[in-house]
Length: 301
Image (cartoon, rainbow, N blue to C red; front, top):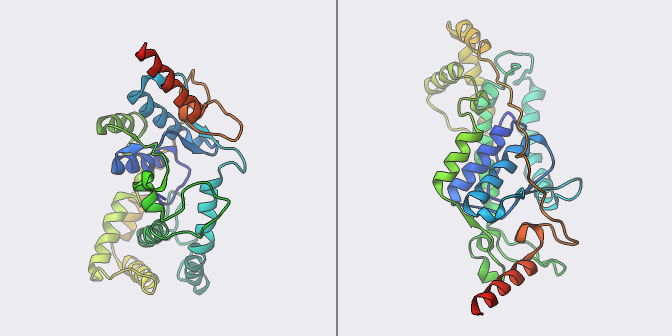
């Protein structure tokens, strides 16, 4: 599990791609192939992955380096999501419901929710939830799962398997990429000024931050998050500058996600029985090793 994100949107393709490229930039490599459901929000990832692969290996031209996983085939991510919903989400959902039940959060209040994006609520809760999600990810990555005798993939602590695949009898298919190519793809497919990257509109962000500092920058945690939220909201409502801030916020236009087509002229990866992957453009490791052996023999003679 390399990255989990909390945000006010999960369907903007530029936002989704930024998560992917941030992860690639952090680790310095990409997977041999990426996979996802066929949603259009994943088109930019498919294009970016394909371009990055082809920039580093021209032999991959002609094939998309992304696998579209239809219903019930995107198994591993779906399992991870199911486990997160079962183990992580319930406690936080209960905490959020408490604020709704008491009346601290009112979706009809403009300050708390407007058509463009969450405001005070998002400003307080999203960064805190992200920290909690990072802790969950760290726990999962460093905890050994129960042994499953029917499982053919390596068994052990996920973080160790990820960093030292050879020690667990596994092959390492990471593809190292140059930082310049990551930046090239980022400039091609992402508009950094898109409003989806704003947690809240900039003018309101500055105003909320000023109120937060005025409160003494209280720490935000499970027992204090609702208190911090209510205190900021009360302070904002008492401010004389509130009407002007709301006017500026309403003028903060929400930009639509630009439609993007898949790169033209590319074939899907070949799909063999019991194998769905990118080795030898979908033919599998056996074909890849066979090709290498043939090339080796050709060089001998």
